[in-house]
Image (tube, rainbow, N blue to C red; front, side):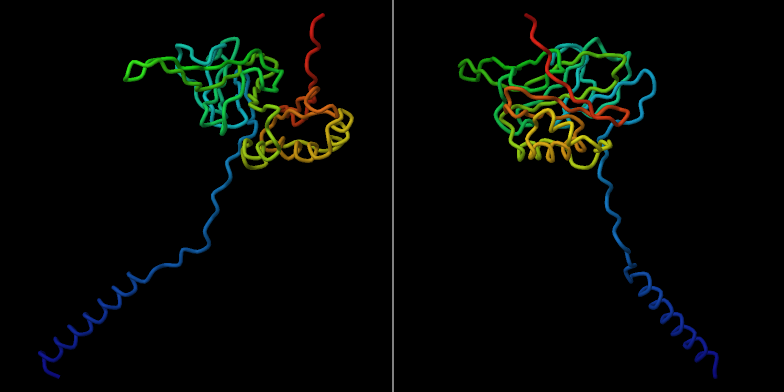
Amino acid sequence: MTAEMTRRTVSVAQAVFAVLLLLVWKTPMSAGPRTRRPTPDYGIPRLAPGLFWVSSVPIGLEVHSGDSPTPLKKVLGRTPLLVKARDLDRFVTVTIQKAEFGKDLPNMLAFLDFTCRMTHSTIFQGVDAGGKDIQEDRARAITYPVRPDSPVIIALFQTKDHSLADLDRLYPPGANFRFSEQNLPERLAKKGVPPEFISAGIRLLHRGGKIALPSARGWDVWSIAEVTPSGQVELLDPPVPAK
């Protein structure tokens, strides 16, 4: 074989090898099974001393320190929110905008959470481009006391008009709050909670940590069920009106 033929043979071999490398490089690699994105956990975290945890139903709502929904201070964050005690006043206020509520805003006195200190309405008043007075109902808010012995606050924006289907849309997804269900159905039945609200209420407690439940007399008398940091479920009765 001549030197010229040898050079040609080597050149052809190099070209074929380069093509094979290109084909291997362009061959798509198997991605393998897709890993599912974990569902966010909205439950109570472990709380070190000096920390407070503020959540809400629904989640994603603005949190202010103090007893006003529109303080001069900036928003601390959105629920669920871990905050330092020194960043809080004696009260904490959680605000829900009309779009976040998912329907027309109720009267501020319609919310069922009697564990709060007060409720608020935010109504914007102004003048449009044509000089006409306008009034816009924009938000509702609930204020809760900050108690060192109870570092968890769950703002509950539930009303008597919420059906079980409405509540299903209001609560966050996932089994966020862990607690033993042992004897819980019996405890709720003793409160007169209807069977359909017992089963649905326990499911929603796992999702949001707090719920108002009617009695055998309907919403004339109701209780609040709330999950504690220790994994217990407290059943709270409304305060007795002062005589």
